[in-house]
Image (cartoon, rainbow, N blue to C red; front, side, top):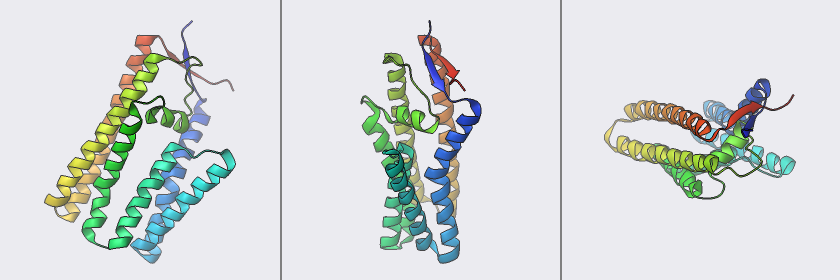
Length: 212
């Protein structure tokens, strides 16, 4: 019989994914926006930073682990806040965008060749994907390749945003950086999904929902 990958049932899948994105992005960046509105840029950065580290600490105490996406967000936000608050310079504020993507690219690349590539961890944590009980080489190679793909996307973004930062006015840079980030992210998700479907067909894998 074909081996199976398992996902939570639709309602639970939506709930799991929504909470993962909320705790790693929605709550800290929402707090940062409110704090900036009430007390200025630095106050917003510190408020967002405090929230994400509190969430991480609670996660560690309650579950014994900190999800990879939450840890990535915490590291990136910490670097951004440290640079902006320490200098107050506009170019340092803008530098956070290519620097954050550079850190993400290096982080993905660092895990891509290992036994637990970051894309596999994110799939397990964000959408609660359960892999077959036995090690599946084809599935492992896919997650390694997908991790390299996302490392490349973030490194391309880092280089592109670095060039835009020194060649374009601030308003134009912010607009183009948003367009580039959204465009490459959507393209990366689409490529990953198509690659995943192709891999499953090639190896006879199926996706099923977990029992109620």
